[in-house]
Image (cartoon, rainbow, N blue to C red; front, side, top):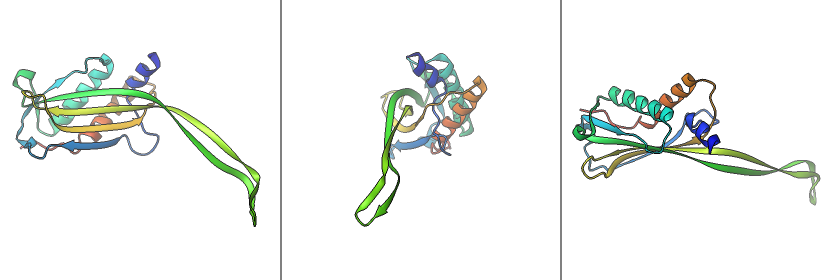
Length: 172
């Protein structure tokens, strides 16, 4: 459990070029740009270090889009988020060496390797404060990685939230 908490502090990083693999969904009947104010609902089971970084990143990104943070009793919409981690493994088998002849391959061998990793999932939801129904959602999936400094974690959190809110509309 301690390992997962430490890894969650770093959120997640894909071992490729992308910061996070993001998918979004929304209710086309909702006029999102007409909203002006929001409130962030803290993840109840989360780590305060992570929650503070996520809250700051969400506030910064939504401010850039023209939204104003207010008390939840005055908000046009609520921002909720959750993060989880799951241990996974990937197994690959490759043919190594040998030659190919008339009767098939010979002289080589099959090598099987298993790679264990922890996959992080991060979800941001926008919901109606009266009905609690979600009208917009972004889901990000990535491989967890450790960082050396709090600033690296903060920078990465900002990048992840930025990527996840890229498609969230600007306010009018």
